[in-house]
Structures are given as structure tokens and as C-alpha cells.
Length: 349
Image (cartoon, rainbow, N blue to C red; front, side, top):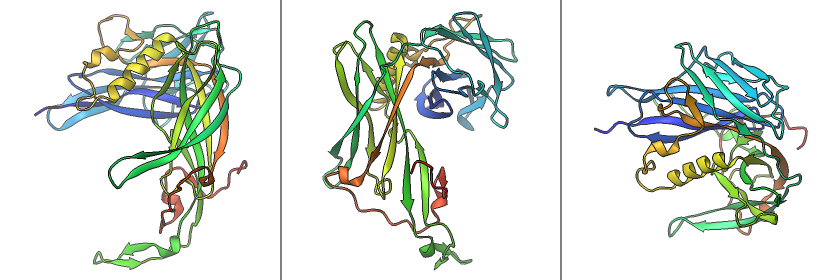
């Protein structure tokens, strides 16, 4: 029987306050430190999450446990050290203060000391300045999945002027807000015998949902072939899932700058995720990030401590932008059953 460890090697920071895990499988790796986190030029708090993978015979496959009680700090290139605090009720998650943010031109190093006396450091990462402007546009996209099924939605395109004086690397992240309509009065429940019976609910018909990474694709760009030019590339694909476009969808695109080393790491990760079959062939050692065990440099530490300058733009997406919008799906339930749903209308809506 073949066992695998399910680990989380990357945790990308969205607007400096939310983290979005990307799950992958790694064979043969046992008791591996996983470092997940980033800081940006956006206001904090920014987060670093520390976990360690483990196996427990045939009972637990891919068990991951948090590393609590560690000393975690960030040191900049001028020698200033900022201590992170462990978040209450979230063991292994460490946060900067809300007023902390990275500065363009400075380099930052992540420092970790565990209760077991192990010390880790990242290689220094420099904050590269992002383009000063970002413009968004959309294109309808329809892709055949099977003979009778297709995916459709909107490609969100980012246009910007690349800096001709340097080699630049970019990553796009996205989040969104949308309104949904449900029919709680038509909810069907179960009686004591388990038979379906009408059980109307008093609330609620309308909700707004916050969505982090509605498009979870790793989207990267190197300016090797476009250096100094005006660039347009796909920053996100928002699928028409028959729910999102009841009214409109507010997409917020973040363009993050990367160092060459960070780009190479995330690009390799993207390639591995696209492999059919065993996604970690070539072996996982090729995914080694920028974290080092100071006493045992040969230890394979998974993850990458990333620093980025960020520029943000937003755009309302509507079903009128699509050539063939899907019919809305009828949801006979309280809209608050959806994750991150609220009945409070956002001020910008």
C-alpha cells in the first residue's frame, strides 16, 4: 500500500489579511517543515503559518500538525527586526501588526526558532517596485469539457506598462464579491423517518459573498519577451457557475511583483500541478524553496517566504458581458449557509 503526505506548501496572502492554501501531495516526505507566508506593501497584518507533516503508520495518512510557541521575526536590510505574534485560537499562525508593511527597495528575511531549538532562516527577498498603473478589461470565454458539457465565464485581462530598466516577474491574485438570491421558503428538510418534507425558513433571501481566489490558478508572467512594452495578459478567469452572476460580480485584481527566484519556484510548482498522474514527478526535492535549517542545511523545508509590491484594480463583471450566460440555479435554502455569506449590504454595492 502506498502512503502519501498531504501537505500545504504555499500560502498566498490576499490583501495582507487572508491566506489561501494550495493542496498538493508529496511522496516519501516525512516530518517536513512547511513554511507558508508573504509580506507585501499593502497594510497588514501579514501572516506566516508553520506546520510539520507526519505519518502515523496506516492510521493517519498525511497528518499535518501546527508548530506552536515558536519565535518568528522578520528582519529588513537595515537591520530592523519585527516580531510576529501567534494568533489566538490559531496555533502555528503568526501575524505582524496591522501597521506593518514592506517597503520597495528593501530586502526582508524570515527568522524562525522552534521550541525544540531548531533555527531556520529564509534567503533575503527584495521588494521590486510594481508598475504604477493597472487597467482591467474582460473577454468572454467558452471551453468544451465533454461532448455535452462546457465551461464558460469571463477572462479578466490586466494591462500595464512594464519597466524597461529591469527584468521583471509578476503574479496575479484575485478576490471578489457577489450577491446571491435564494428561496428559503421552499426549503425541503427531513422528518423523523427521514422522508423529505417542506420546512420553510424565515430567512434569508439575499446575501453577499466574499470570495478569495475565485480563480485558484497560479498566474505568472516574466517580461523576457515583452520587456519595456505595454503588456496585456489574463489575470483571472471567473467562471459562470449559475450563481455568481445573479446581479454583478466585483473582481479585485492584485498584481504582485516577484524576485527571479520566487518566479522560478512558483513556475515550477505550476508545472508540477499540471502533470497528469503523479504530480510530483520529477521528485519533490526540486520544489525546495528559500528556507534553510541553519544547523542542518540539507533538510528539505517546503514553502517560500515571498515579498511583493502590489498594485490593485477592480471591475464589476455582469452577465451582459457574456455571449451565453447560464440560467441561474435555484437554491431553496437560507443564503447564509454559504461560506463567508452576509446579509449586510457592502457600502460599495
